[in-house]
Image (cartoon, rainbow, N blue to C red; front, top):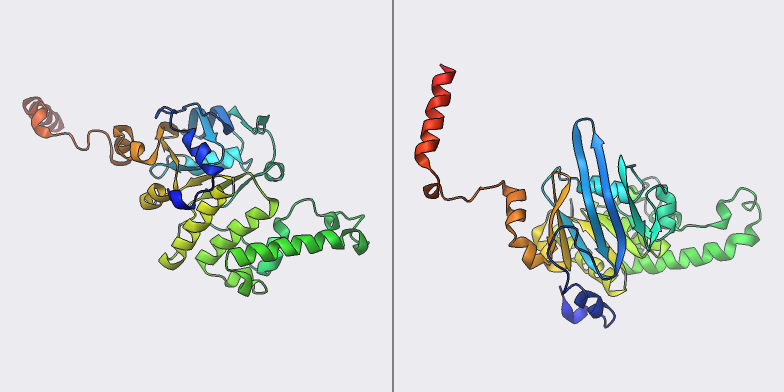
Length: 305
């Protein structure tokens, strides 16, 4: 965390986490998202099995875990891109577990994707304009009457221009989105998400495929979202990034939340080490009953013969 860049409004929100226990499903003083008994099964695989989860408002929370832990599936469920087998969750106290993705976004909960979803054949500016919701010109009965919606379109374009300058994409605004580099597409997707002025932004592996030159820029933008008072929840495998920018970390393994806490506490948690490297990976063999192990091995060899 970069304390020097934090706003005065951010510091109390971080301080509120001091008394939160470093335990799975820990209750937060001011959660923006609360979920209970969320499950999703694909055939015989239970991809998500979360008993309770809370996301604190106004801070950056990292969702980490080994491949196949269920992180992206949980993202898809919370944002309405997939439906659970069971469970419920709220956003700002309102239930959204049966709300479609576009309505979830309108309520102020937006996400990006690990594989960017830019519209390649449209310009960068057109991608930005499409990110705005509630556009009157999209209604078929108003479309012929430009004078009714041109003022709103002008405001949308001005906001898009401001965001493109902020994300250093203004020089590319007339280029096809498909011509952007992988890192620039990540920036565009993040900028487009801000067109709806969201309260909660969920980033799915924002650093995947990004070259080192743009990585620091993306890190700065994520921090700025928190400093503006927004809530950020992100999935990431880069542990250096997790340590650098997250205020709280939630760890998943085999679909469940196995640990959570501050970055320092989580990195030292044996449950996290086991989740990533396998239980007893660091057990000293001298402490085990080597005679029993040898006997078991010999028995298996004889049975194989």
